[in-house]
Length: 424
Image (cartoon, rainbow, N blue to C red; front, side):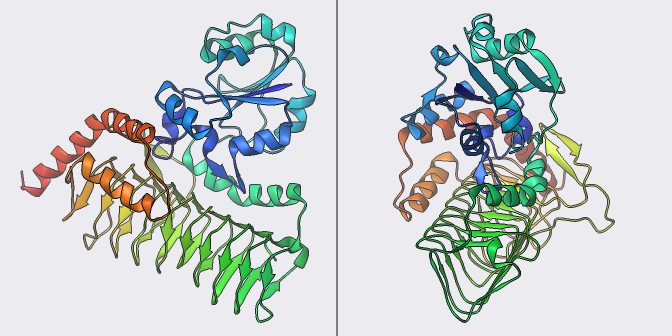
């Protein structure tokens, strides 16, 4: 059986966290959606389909994988939408030969026989998905999907627990100091090889499991509350990590964090609160940077999605921060904030606007174009070089294309704030 993981045309509902990555690369629980699908479905081989903008970048990021190769659309295969994050889907999909599962008209998964696949239009992934739904027995999708960024946060604690149970590991293969403790069931804690828990750390498993991955280090005066996943080579520095957090790999995190997902190579080294947030790669949050995740009147939070405020239907919503964004000391982010790719945020003495477009600077209370894209790319090269990583020509080309597609919304906000700043 072959596994085909694809992203559909709803990826923009997940902006800003999908500007530089496919929907199936979003993290939730201990893994990305793609990692979980590959692990749970156990296919013989896997192919990936991304929007044309991302094709070259994914060819470079996944050199051994088949990316946007329509020759893979034959034989018995499973189609899996990259927004599918529910571990419970795997068994039913595997056994459901000939069936297709849809949600609001979108194909979420299908298990096609070789005969059914041969009847589909394989000239493109879009046509194949469309015709696959038509040749299969239809069923409503009963599983969790990531339709908006807040879906990832709202599912994270439960998925950490399910991923922990599926991993089947507990105990200490790394090290834990005798002056640290596990408060709650010890079998709900796993410390992987090379991971180190230093003195005066409390790992609280009463609310769910805690998984500390290979090479991670947890410094003194830290409290970890499960469900919690600390990724490979991540450093937790005297922090209060509340329930429902997935952090890393290769992050440095301090302060207070609650029900948040932090991608690799991002830092929140200092004090400050981060709650119900999704933070992409290469983000640096300055000292005392804090976000609000609940309104004073406890009403449902609205978030900017495709240029319009969208009701999330929930009262606990933090911020969604795109890749390579940096904040100064003392930045305070609004409830339900959309912060784009490569933004620079300076403290203004008040709460920031709910929407900051990509590649913009927020300075003196207004959104500006700053010093331009080349200066932002120079900063990215320096930041990545500190971790012995390189901004490749392919990745730079992707960033430049995203700069183009976000140009109109950025100019509109800059013009609006300029008029406000000038008192017009």
